[in-house]
Image 1 (cartoon, rainbow, N blue to C red):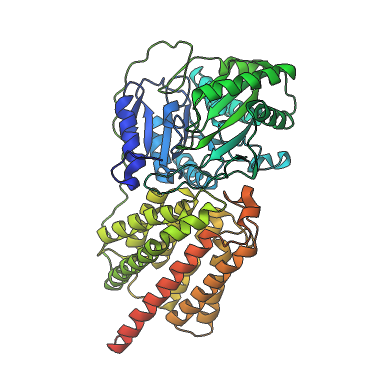
Image 2: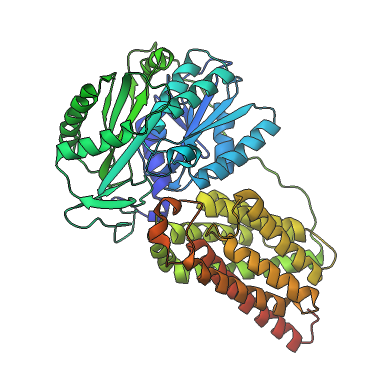
Length: 579
């Protein structure tokens, strides 16, 4: 478990600051992550990688000549927010366009996707290649749904080498796609990992057992098996990867044995020796392999095997020199240090004067966010435990980080219009929480704020517009459908109930009470569903019988808001104030 920290909530930022202090010859700190501190030639493609913290050497440790240009760094096991990715990519851009590359996780797809739209809108040509190497997370005919684990390294290395060689964005993207398709990985765990400040690991593997098919965010495997010998483990990993080999595979492969955090190097070397013999017996030649910790998961006891089937073109870029804090190959000419201008968030403030009605509604919005924080704090631990059943256990922590930041931002903006306050709160939620829920909740709160705006007066119709905007933001961004076992399964019944009651003439408080009840009931009903999206999807059987944590937290929050609004309206009516 992690023992060295001041405040667990600050662990990722503090660790990143220390990493930069220890590696100033390679990287410089920018808002949202790190960029190369060495010269990048004008016109070179910028490879921007990233994801949650807790995976070192991925992702910041892979920034340097011959590999990544920059890394966006999220919180522990949580995607960096869209604004962080955008700012890091802006700092990395050298005029040749940007290639974003990261593991195929829902939160990363959402946040990096938002950043890509913004960069392209500003004229910075930006493409994306997601890494999908984990064969345990989806069958071969659904390869696009697979998640990225240690195969991140092969894609990043070859794309980075191609960019360093001066290839244009089209060519770098093509090589990254080709590398990803030819990369396969499979991991095993002997025990789970523990988030900073947590008392227990996210999961346990029974004594004498091994969990097969784990992820790198603390997710347990998809099946448990009796603990094998080293030779038996090598046979399991090699046989399953060879059975999944890509079309057109040759006989030259890169083999990567990757430790996930606490497996000793001696054990990794022992296993690698067994694996190499099996690969040779299968008629394969192992080319420039790697054996060590490359993409970890905090203190997880486990490892993975990655195979990249090479062709002449890919072998050239795999063998090319690279020089980063954690990965070095061959020799590169020294690069001069560059002076960074400093990257800050764009200041989008203006001189808006809030109307009296908008300022009053803004104050009410701050009070509502305080109630949301209270209910999240109350249920933080339970939500984490529910999420750990088939996910990574960070839903409670992520919601707490998001709502803490949102409330702080709203309080800072107090006195502004309700639209400005909710926009600030949504941006802060997204930035601080990261992950899928961070992107969705942040975008939804912003949408509600835009619907309310800065008007001279407000009515129940504005409440209905805010509800519609909130829901539409989540469904359009997340792309989830009813029955996928996500927050949407509680969100849509909430909207239907609210609008049905309101259109029938009910006041806001009654419509909200009916909607909250519908959301809580629908959230409970998700227990019978199998997850079709998100991190719980590969562990569908474990999820059945337990409600979706995102739906549950949404139901709890809407119930709390309903109680608060009902109380406020009753108080206003008692004082003779028209609601």
